[in-house]
Image (cartoon, rainbow, N blue to C red):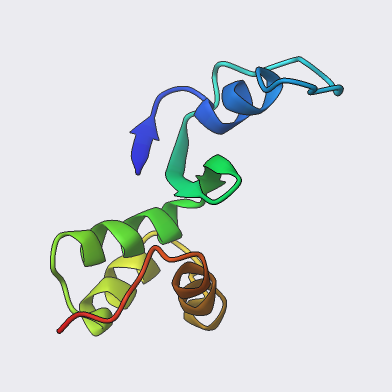
Length: 96
């Protein structure tokens, strides 16, 4: 995860081979991004501030309840949507 002063996901998107869309980038838009590998290659996706805080709390060893409380402090956070999504893409796994 990166919290950047620049729109990294957008910059990544417009610089991909075969991109055929609007190339304009608003460099005044800070952005948190999640970067991970998938079987098809690297994925760079923008994440909202609440999701960023949730994942950051988990990465720092916080329990689920604390991570949700931390995320909720950054705005609207949908645990029911976020948790299955990040488990399915392999970012969250069961810890033993």
